[in-house]
Length: 293
View 1 (cartoon, rainbow, N blue to C red):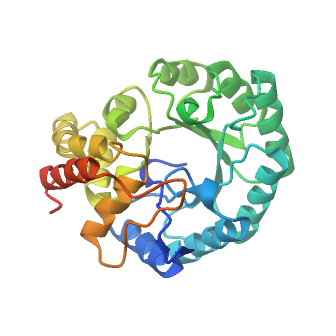
View 2: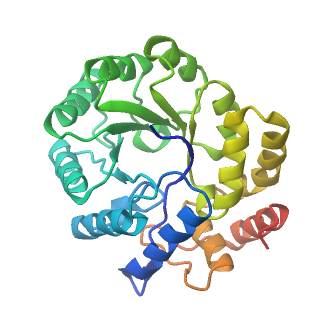
């Protein structure tokens, strides 16, 4: 259903407001460069700082600009189940192809709570769900047994996972119980090579914002089993993968994009601030190593 290089899109800002024109240009560039799906309003899109209206307008802009060329997986997650439901319904009505649903943060629900939360959403809205497990940010871990139970209960609704747990053994645990049809997408660019080798089908990527063509080529080589080419591209991208997290994301990503495009800038929303001089030096080196500057 979803595979290859899938950027978790940044949200461009200008003078404090969402720059929808720049966002649309970013969507076009990503599709032209070979990205195979798009994720608006995820972590890299600074979703926690967006108003509901902004989030829904970004869904609409992404779906309209993509124009059916690639699927749109709208970031609909919330730590409030009813808000998540609302975002999902809006995304469906606007034509999104799926919803990316992060584990509820701050509340710290149990596995039973996670099962109830995602089951409720799957029952209420006819839209495929890609679970998003990033315990380093949410302090809530969607355990393999919970993922497996959800996918068994709702095989047409709970279709995959973006896994940023860092635990590579989960690939096999999910695969053994759910088969290859359950979409497993890496949530960490620097682990994507090994993730695909273990049975993954792609990456919801931060680096693809900056290097979409290289990330698409890397994913294509990796998934085709051309490991010599995949290693070559992975090593070309690896310093950039690391540099983009030398300060609070997505500040380094926006710095990199501003270096590449005059229609993008460094603006992030508080409580984030522009990345440090040290992070900029790391990004500069990563861009140079990748051959992007």
